[in-house]
Image (cartoon, rainbow, N blue to C red; front, side):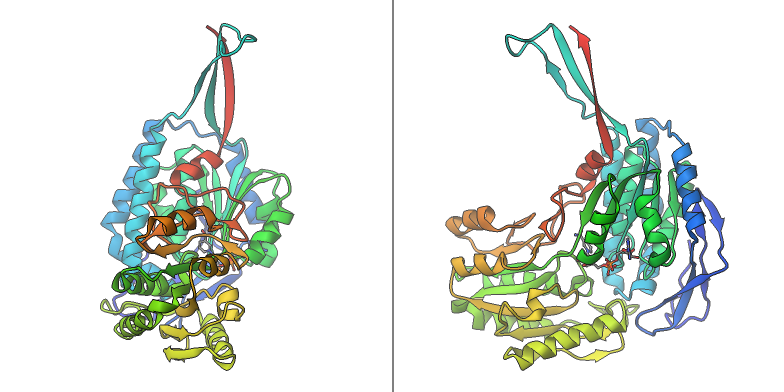
Amino acid sequence: LQVVPADASHDQIIRESLRIAGDKVTCERNIDVAHPYTGKVIATIPKASVEQVRKAFSIAAAYRSTLTRHERYRILMRAGELIAARREQFARLITLESGLCLKDSMYETGRASDVLLFAANQALIDDGQIFSCDLTEHGKRRKVYTMKEPLLGVISAITPFNHPLNQVIHKVAPAIATNNRIVLKPSEKTPLTAYALADVLYEAGLPPQMLSVVTGDPKEIADELLTNEHVDLVTFTGGVAIGKYIAAKAVYKRQILELGGNDPIIVMEDADIEEAATLAVSGSYKNSGQRCTAIKRMLVHERVADQFVELLVEKTKALHYGDPFDAHVDMGTVIDEAAAIRFENVVNEAVAAGAKLLVGNQRQGASYSPTVLDHVQPQMTVVREETFGPVSPVIRVSGIDEAIRIANGTAYGLSSSVCTNRLDYITRFISELNMGSINVREVPGYRLELTPFGGIKDSGLGYKEGVQEAMKSFTNTKTYSLPW
Ligand code: NAD
């Protein structure tokens, strides 16, 4: 594991190599990785050729894992222990490549250990079913049994930048738990943690043929990751545009697509406004607002909107943002300057169209300050599209009908937060919001790493992730029947 110096302005450049079935393979061509806060190059990663990607898939396809459930459990538990023991190092690596503050990256490493713990335990569970066949008059004296088998082919996994460790581990750990082989392509913006994770898994005893990691120019290698003859399943987390490209390209491959979100927090007139504002702030700014389930719209009942907005502004101003390596900072940078400029532009556009800027919209490089906008209209770009950054746009609503209509009024359907204690409201939200999750008095992103998670509409095909669901997707169900 690369040791990240305490000083973010270090000069030592990390030189990464591919991991082809555990072998470190260098390439003639490389890609620079910069620390978003300083803009300085901190690492180079290999730009794999299509041939190298093919090699990763053919080695994986030729290998059949014979690991027992107990052995998979041990590997996953051991990897969790190694990450926990090196938690600080992992957190610093995440911060270095992503600009996420140390508080966020420490939290992320903790989540990764949870994923490994759950995957290890799920590996011990045989979820086969038994059906007696004497259920109808056509029945026989037999039983039908089900069993889960790993895929015959290989899993191709593609991940986004926003959680350099957690996005990756949510694909790799369930793959190991189900005895699959996986080739991973992390985001070229945040690839270092993925390479470090692979090394931890090899160290924990994973047969190296079960995991390869490649990086490169997606324009060159992405199609190979989607169409290689050995690929049985593509699991992708990222934006809608690429998700839909994959849907069209990866023909006759099983597809798990976890795409963007535009999650609302809905604050009704009876809500505890202090609690709602606290949830709004944490849901909007954690991870610099770069979570698929970050709060991207705040739909607030007009009767409590003034009170809510006052608290929201107060709590936003109390947030410390800046140097991500400063342990006291609550929010680091966003991923790069281009992203920060995009937020600035959509906020300026909203203000020009009549929204009121109450705090923020300050940018320096990839640092973008937490921003509150009031009197936002649903058709404004800042809320109609996914704003993947620390922006809190408040839309005032007259009641539950309007709240539900606006909440459902975007292309997305990932998750949501509703702040109310009225059971009639709660039951309506749960049944009428077209989202994958509804969290009452919690941020949209709340979940266990084990529980089903994922969206509908443009947020995904309705297949869920979370360790248990991912394990179901990563297996084939075989049935066999016996005389009984
Ligand atoms: P992105 O879609 O730009 O990139 C994701 C990955 O796709 C990267 O690894 C990239 O290299 C790769 N890629 C690029 N071109 C490709 C191609 N033609 N074919 C296949 N892969 C290709 O996303 P991003 O900017 O890294 O991440 C932000 C997005 O991810 C946001 O929209 C966010 O909402 C979404 N996201 C969704 C979830 C979820 O679980 N639903 C979680 C986190 C992030």
